[in-house]
Image 1 (tube, rainbow, N blue to C red):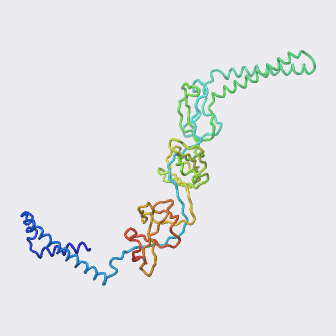
Image 2 (cartoon, rainbow, N blue to C red; image 1 turned 90 degrees about the horizontal axis):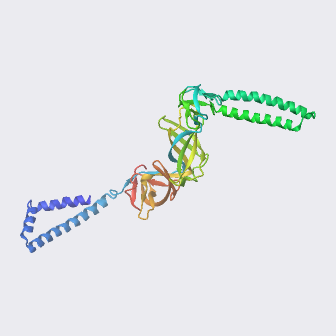
Image 3 (cartoon, one colour; image 1 turned 30 degrees about the vertical axis):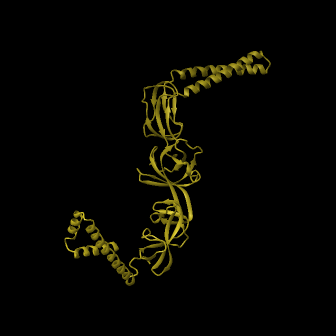
Amino acid sequence: MRKLVYILSFSTLLAACGGGSEKSTEEILESNDIETIQKKRDELTAQQSELETEIKKLDSRLKEINPERNIPLVTSFAVEAQHFDHFLELQGSVETRKNVVLNAEMGGILQKIYVEEGQKVSKGQTLAKIDDGGLSQQLAQMEIQLDLAKTTFERQKRLWEQQIGSEIEYLQAKSNYEGQVNAVKQMKSQLSKSVVSAPFSGTIDEIITEQGNVVSPGQTQILRIVNLDDMYIKTDVPENYITNVTQGKPVEVTFPVLGKTVDTKVKQVGSYINPNNRTFTAEIDVPNKEKEIKPNLTARVKINDYTSENAILVPQNILSENADGEQYLYVLDEVEGEKAVAKRVIVKTGKSQGDSIEVLEGLKDGDLIIEDGARSVKEGQTVKIMNY
């Protein structure tokens, strides 16, 4: 305002000297006459001094008749201790421990597939059959030989108990029988590899190899079976949260694609810190009764890493920082009606959530904080409270 009065007054004075004052000044400059130029400068300096004196008189009078014209207008609020939850926001993907691709354990032709994609199966159910290459016939022959060895052994045993026959004949019959038993077991174990069974109850997600193809043991993938009951989210947590993110911590999980949010807990935290990105893993259980959540689905995870029952929160936009790096805000002191004095308070802050931040030191419950106008007041300045 003062600058505006100065400009107007100076413009009026110049106009009073005649419309050609600017031209006269130019003519004086072009003359290169030192005395004339110095004289013109002295005249303008005197005029400037007179204007400043007049402006001071006007300011003094305005202050007398309107003392409140320079009082800043502010709004305030009283801080209250309240419950505060801070959430660490991360991203993770959905996984399941029951998502298995079944490989062939025996080489041969994939003789039969008994299921279809999308079909629900039970644990132990036969899913596919590989041609055993005649092993079943060999097993049948070995079982006949086993029966004969068993009968021979039992007879030799009875004779030996009656002290008839030699001991060597008894031992040979026993050894032959036991060897045949082991051979049959091995053959059955080998033959069982020709049958592909469900390791758990679930749904056939994909048939990878079609019936009639030749498969190789340990290399050919036959089908995928998935169970959507045992789902969890795996996420990487920065190492500086290792003491805050622990087993049992509440978690809010959001699936953007589904538009769905569920509340759950941290099931397990890893004991190993990855040296490449300085993180540890956390596993979070995901309830999936409606079977909407699928493996590899992206999820946003909010882990409750900090809670305070008596937190003092203030808007982040009212905080300022001094030259020493200290944060401060203004509180209202000496409140009388709608007038108060602005007092600068150095504060120590903690965690923030959204637009709010927790003040750990410097404020107490019930303090009046300047909100609107906080950045335009000064220490010890009288202010007017608009929301009084």
